[in-house]
Length: 106
Image 1 (cartoon, helix red, strand yellow):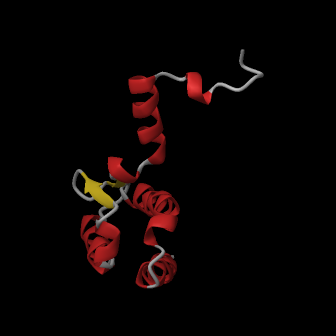
Image 2: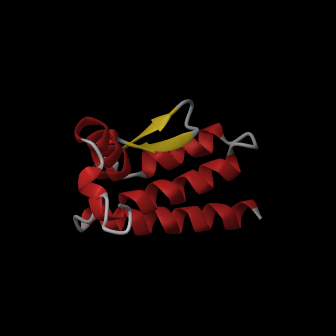
Image 3: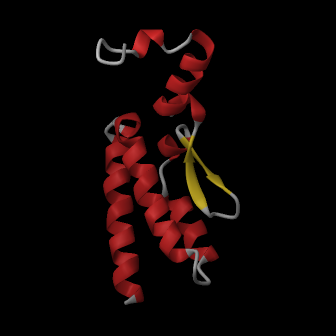
């Protein structure tokens, strides 16, 4: 079971690293964060700190432009600069939501 899980993780990391090598990291960053957090969420219930640290070390530097790891290798977090939802909320708070209302909302 353990070897299979590691193999799946390694294949997934390879896939995401190829995406980053080809210059599409920003387009896939939300999928990357949710996938990595899924793996990390499963692993945090066991003594897997070193494995999580090694997984983070296997990532290409391109990913670190968009994400960081919170806590002791507990979860990946999308940087605010690239988090479109947080940017939209910040814009609405600053300028109001009138621009985003449709005719159905009035």
